Length: 84
Image 1 (cartoon, rainbow, N blue to C red):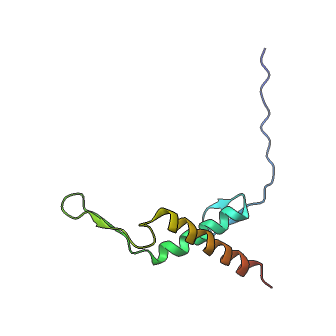
Image 2 (cartoon, rainbow, N blue to C red):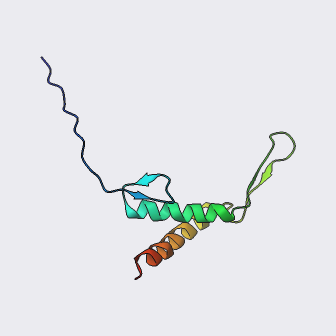
């Protein structure tokens, strides 16, 4: 006879960004906040699939630069949150 694993409930500390998703680490929450801030200023346009291919904004055209901006902005947001 196989023994079943017991499922238990445990409280966990989570971090929320603007009342949306929950994150288990502060770093993930700050990165999400940085992405949200960047996407508010994003000017990307999707194509219609036929004639217009769309437009990629300066934030998203270079993935390495985008990740660097996210890291820097997340660090600034973290400093702002921690400062007294």
